[in-house]
Length: 183
Ligand SMILES: [Zn+2]
View 1 (tube, rainbow, N blue to C red):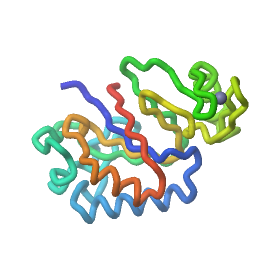
View 2: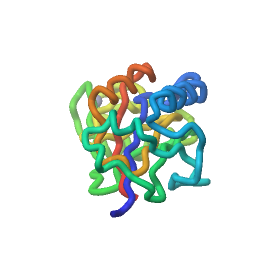
View 3: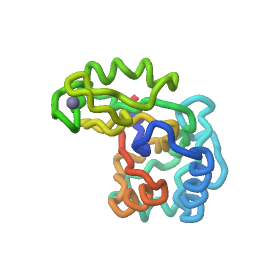
């Protein structure tokens, strides 16, 4: 089985108080026994430090039998720096404007050169001038751009329940995008 990542990201470029909210979400996940309380080397990126899958995770997925076991990468990594999350497989680079409905993917993805260093959180539609947080545009394949992200390593096949995704978004206070990455 090849590694994949399921990433939950709030749909806002600059999440206010993102580090405190990351800690609050982690506390909730630990209380529910969804992840282990201490980070170990069960992630994939950087230091590989992540919070390992725990028994309570079975209650928040559709297919508990497909949760990762002691497979090396099974943990939750929390990213608190600005990051671009796009699918890697068959990514078409398409995006639409919610105001004029034109396809503006090329200009939008080019504009990430300005977004990534934090020069702006916004994108302006080249067709009609509509300006919004870049996450406010339309993505057929879920994409997200934020200073906060939750990477679940190899949980994708198990599939989060809608109830869990709803509560996750409620606790974050923002709509959440689910981005699938198969590195
Ligand atoms: Zn437009």
